[in-house]
Image 1 (cartoon, helix red, strand yellow):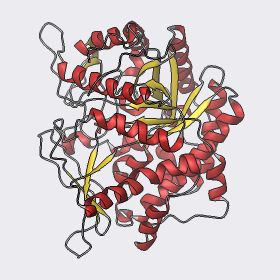
Image 2 (image 1 turned 45 degrees about the vertical axis):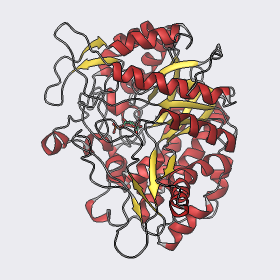
Image 3 (image 1 turned 180 degrees about the horizontal axis):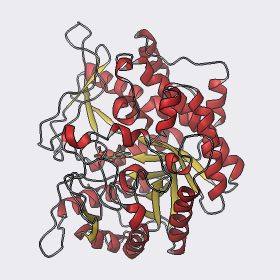
Length: 484
Ligand code: BG6
């Protein structure tokens, strides 16, 4: 694909991203109480050999060093999330002063280094107290409690933070619901709850959008969607229809809420037919429609592929497939909706070790597609390559595969921009190595290597990877130094 020679806009935000529970550690320190992620992951090591979230990258204790490294890389923005359970440990009630101080210190440090904070209010880590009290996202009560938490946080940082994102990856929460939310064993057979939880998140998202509009006059707010464009496996009309169905249920169903304030009809028809549709109370859709988005954050790692799946009883409905070992091909299945679509491997694309297709053009495709439909500014809030990195004896990490991945994705984003897409920021995943949501700390994404393993947290010493120097050059030249 030809690369363009026009420059990136002067104010383009070259950034990087993390999330609280995956990077902070200090899970039980200074008044923080557990989030559902601390509980969901508490036996990860015994069960799968993956580290827990207790220490993660120990960013809580290293944040000044981390911000200094980010500044050395030249970052103009840092997208991170606030842990509700650090700020209001019981979910409601008393604020933890040490917890809120941590985020004040972090944001002050970022601003002092000229780095724009992009804050995510919620990234999978609901306070455990709310799960114990009423089941967490299963209950509508969570929307009111989220409002109180969000109002507090937005008020606290409204003078310093312009860019707010609401809830990370609702679509992925629906797919991997028992990993992203605590769902009691006895409720896991009730798949309608996936969409009910998502409906509650839609309400919370709208509430947060309205709060930013009320409290931060020059602010911008939007959700962060986990997004994969979906290609038909073949040009057979059935496969093309299946890809459209998959798009409607996995992508359109969220985008239409954020930008049109309504559920996608085809996806709703499918859900209703199978008793999976959310229960919508009077006033809900009005609230959702009132919470307009100014922008959208996009997390893109891989495109996906769909084919037709007959509804003849040969296949069961399922929502995901995952590779837990990092051995290519070890994926345990594919999302399947008989009579609608079935996901499958794309034979035309290479993958990373966890079977995620590597597809830079997919990023250009989705950015153009989303922008053409909704015409709102976009930011890439995550994009990156999970890999087994190696720290050499002399303290280097050679990660040309990551540089190659990022370079091609930046080029793809730039082509989309040249076709008119308004991009605010590019925040690859991740600023530094952190705990993967599905594969422990052995699956690394960062520009900064964190010296720990799943077995041993060591000192979490930081090292600059080769990609660190490469990204520094990209930023310094405002993209002009890219070799594509
Ligand atoms: C996104 C999440 O789904 O993908 C991140 O927002 C996550 O939290 C990232 O880390 C990569 O996925 P994983 O499973 O490799 O950590």
